[in-house]
Amino acid sequence: MGGKSKKKSGGKDKAKEEKRKKQELKAQKKAGKKSKKKGDGDDDLDDLDAILEEIRKQDAARTAVTVEVCEHPSPRSNFSLSPLDGQSNSELLMFGGEYFDGNTSECYNDLFRLNLDKMEWKQISSPNTPGPRNAHQAVAVRDQVYVFGGEFSLGYQFQHYRDLWKLDLNGNAWTNIELKTGPSPRSGHRMVLWKHFLVLFGGFYETSRGVKFYDDLYFFDLREEKWHQGIGSSKQVQKPSARSGFQFVCHAAQNTVYMYGGYSKVAVSSLSQRGRNLDDMWALHLTQPGKAGECPTFRWESIQNKGSPPTRRSGAASTVHKNRMIIFGGVTDKESANDVDGMFYNDIHAFDMDRKRWFELRLQTKTAGTNKKKKRKGRGTGGSVATTTEMSSKLEKDFPSEDEDDDDEAYSDNEDDCGLDDNAFYVIIDGKVTKIDIEDDEDGVDNDTDKEVDDPKEDAVQKQEVAVEEIQVVEKEEPKAPVNEPPSAPVEEEQVAEEQVAGEQQQVAEEKAAPMPR
Image (cartoon, rainbow, N blue to C red; front, side, top):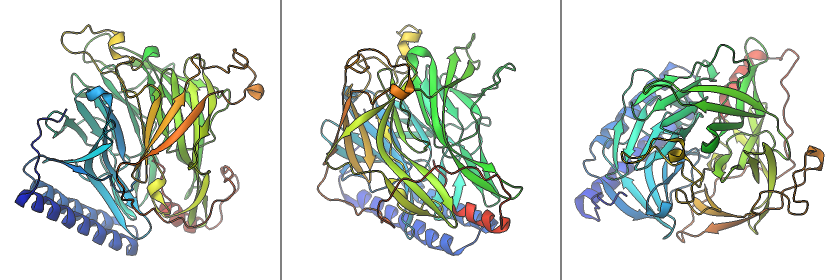
């Protein structure tokens, strides 16, 4: 895949590309410095529009596709990482992301491809590339990758997108699918593949005047290239609250998408909001439409957290392993004064989607470290490089080719021949590839008892071990983001304030500075 792309190895074209990249980064750094000095207001958007226009002009100068072997990507957060079909399913595609350490601010639209057999990175540059963004979503479907939304952010300035892009992996060509209908501009949403639909939920939209979280559901028909908004039945009583940064995976055999956790804000007065970390679990049951071109029908179901669920969190990495939803890491934020204290995790939990039960997996590594508390000053600061990791494993098998039957089995994500190593997952932290191996216990239950434990109080950690290995791709290491204070005790979950908040005007200014989990 991508073999038809013409590879440039030197000469004037390479020099021009390097110059263009330097000019783009220079413009972003200059804008980042400005954003630290400016207050909230419409002038911020004017600045961003000018910056984006300059970046578009520089990208327009690119006339050919280049594919070059490179070192690992620079440290960043809120990028997308997609497993690709073909080539023994041993390739990952990384796009975009952001870096902000309190001083330097950068937002990326670079594209990287990682060959897991060779442990080799390649950078792909193409004409008509989507603008720099982070907190977007990307889904691989055979030889194409779909990217929706996200935001362009520099320091304390940001602008949300509602565009939908398609990348052809055969020629590395981008296409903007221009549609008048569809989701509004947003970041922090989640999107998965089910049959021939992209299923999208939630996210947030922020301006200098406030932030809005979404609880809407959309379906993108890949055959018709058309958005449908999921209205739901009038009899539907329960549904998830608005949120961003949640976990969202598809169990194709059940025609069900599972959701866990996330982040939102709730009003505590007429002028202020308080952040809230979530730990609720939901199942979205889906049914194929009766006719082509129609919207699927669906039903939400609230799932009780049985077993050993994760703590409240957002921004965790998640993927599907056999019949389990695997969650790694994440963050719990607690707002105080002008700061946000972030409790970052490196634990691993599994949700058995057949038994509807959580298990904690034992982590075995010499270098994994412990959960850490970090100061997070302002939007995306305080070590935001490690705020979000992305996990990738089994591909969801896409809709069939013309010579295949159009049935449920054609879309299963549990086939042995349509993913990466069945018991291996990959996360990227600070630009480094980390492999997680799971030593399966075959039936997914505690071998000491060989039966399910119905009492949550007696539900011990599952007898399953997880080995973590950092994979060395290149010798050169990028500097780590600064940590403002040493590890300390976990942060307790905040409760929504019941009393009247004092100094409401001051709190409004404080909450605008807080980062938004994506």
